[in-house]
Image (tube, rainbow, N blue to C red; front, top):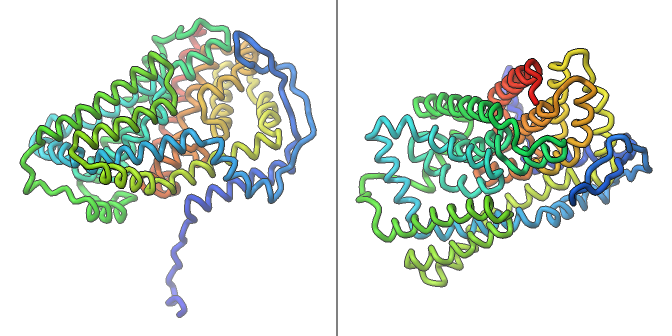
Length: 469
């Protein structure tokens, strides 16, 4: 059948898996064009740091078809910790959901939200601020993933959409991470490498964090209000209709949270508190947190009066639902593996360095922000970026009239693009968990990302003018 005259065939964007593989293929092609390069490293206080004057070309290792198709498998291996974390957390939350305690909590909040103007206005600001504090202090990043499974159904029950549910924990933690004032994983490491007193300059960074978090809250509240008034404005409208059919949250037969539900939720909150304490006080990472959630799932299942078969079957089902998420994370990690194995990451970094030089310190700081934004596309670890770029950016900042504190701030603000880039395992993992296509999310993020960019440029001006040390 031919299309009717004058009709337009609707363009269908490719699946996230296809987009990621296209990126993989483009990087593989680039390995044939970009020469290999390397910076020498030396050990300083137990850390391998790059010598900024040591760059030299080395034979490149172009990545062919075999390397391209092996990259997802290698990505799966190298991202095993975060993939295992996602599967374990998915299983634990499935057990939690099986107890119906979360459903009861959502209904209680929905009822209170309908009757209390204060809760209606405070819900988004309070939770976004909480997640932002987590990102700004103990580097909350992957830890926000489990909360998507709570806030998406909560947002739908309150008349919002999946985008709002994802944004509360995800954008909250990411903006806190990028605008951090006491985060040891980006601010602390970068300052230590740059020879700046650790956590110095926190006063201005605190102002930056307040502004960035406030902008995020204002944007999200504006968007949520529009979607609640007209749900069809949501880019996930069709998906939300399907989710509401799958998980109805009617309040007609709801008689309140039972004692058993309260005990389950208390254990859940206590587990989160233990997680925060472990991360802050004992340097817990993904494996310890995953172990905590595994134990939590078992205890919650028993307290929630589930038998062993129900606990196991719920856990397996929860992990099974996140297999697609695991594969997306593996693909995203594969992009970095190709560039690393071809030895082109240092070459690209070296090629960007001359672009920083400028006649005015403000312009130089802006260029640093732009370079860090580009680098963030390939390297999403705050500590990894700090170790790679600060040994070069710190001495370079001295030459172009930008203080090292300002160079560190430019490095931080470059991470504000993480919620949008498709090479971030956390980003695509969260979106796969919420069943939002990356392109749908990217379109929604464009206005906020532009706001972040303008905000970052404005934030970098005062430090240049006051010679911030």
